Length: 535
Image (cartoon, rainbow, N blue to C red; front, side):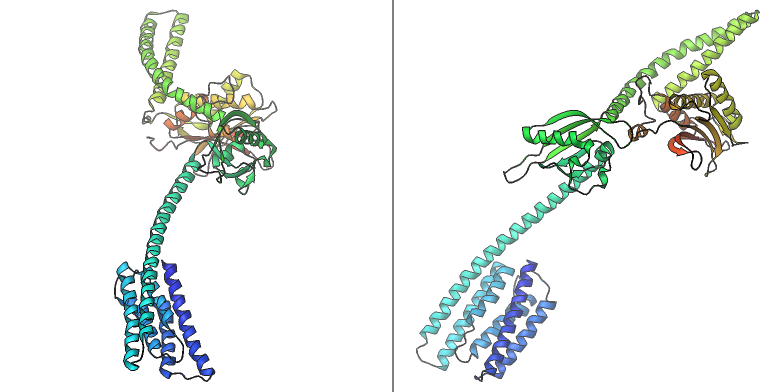
């Protein structure tokens, strides 16, 4: 409707310019003109320009300021020119402009009322002409009546068309808003899906891809400008073949495909395809391809198993706790009556191992229940460097591993940590490092230092191959492992033990020195011993 308003304003300016030009041409040709008509035409040009520049758009609902400044001015101007017409010039067709404007931009009452006023003005002009020249003026009355009738027909048709246009535009706006909302929701859902999504046309071009697809496929997919050919990389050729098969068979397809990566081994991907529904033959179907990393899928399954195993482990731990307490108590009573040192040594071993089992039971209960970390006693403090040296040397002696270097540079740093928990963390990290490190001197390095935040840190570095991105994302999840022989609980328990003591554990790929070889580093940042830890 605003465009129609601007169209009518431009039309009024054009008519005003034509009227003024007509007066100028008449004067140039030497024909008789009236100065009042020239002045009226010039005034009409000014009024049309002012209305086009300053008159605001709104639906005309009556004889208001908008009606008077536009339609009213037109009716008065055209009627005055019709009365002052010289020669054979007839201004009657100009009355169609205000009639159309009232019918399109106003209500039905405004449209019909404007038409009625124009018709009455034409009839009034015929009466005035009859009074001035009482001759046979019947043709003028007939012409005025026919013109009025035509104006009424034009007003009715134009008003109905305008109403239909308004309804259609309102429906189109609602549909557009709904479509935009659905598009935004779809984009958000696709962007946050853990599954990779590709939208492919019949020619094998990708029109949409989410971040998960980039993470699964690699090869710089996110950097390609859409649309791009799916077979842009040889590694994606099996995906392009599956998309063509989907279009050929017109049915969903499913397949497990190894996809080569820019770094590391190929990734096993489960691919499912579906075709979009079309309502007509002119709309092209699209193939929507869903990608799932089988390793991540297996990790989620393991996580679900953890919930069930956690409930079971809590029940088993409760059942173990009572026999352990009985064994500990019986061993203590037995040791009171024993005199033989060998027998007393055996009972001491029983008590020590029973206490160790009791601590393991407590840890299992902590993990299974995900309970809040307890406030550690003030006495549970260890000197970091001597403790790490002792534990690392014990591991080297037990594992018979060569090439381990110690670089302890956190002298005087005490950390609040249970020594048995620190032993388990260090042993787990060293076992992982030994599994992938080389045999050369310095292939495994254990260091301590004070980081930039002032926290003591323990670092275990090895020269193993870089970890795949998919493995890095799930390093500390339970039951996730890149090897079938591993339970996948080592790093998970390390993280749980660190969180219980206010420490953080992480992984990064880096070189120990500029220009040196890169390796895998696991680091533990401890909380300062002076702070009381709660969770």
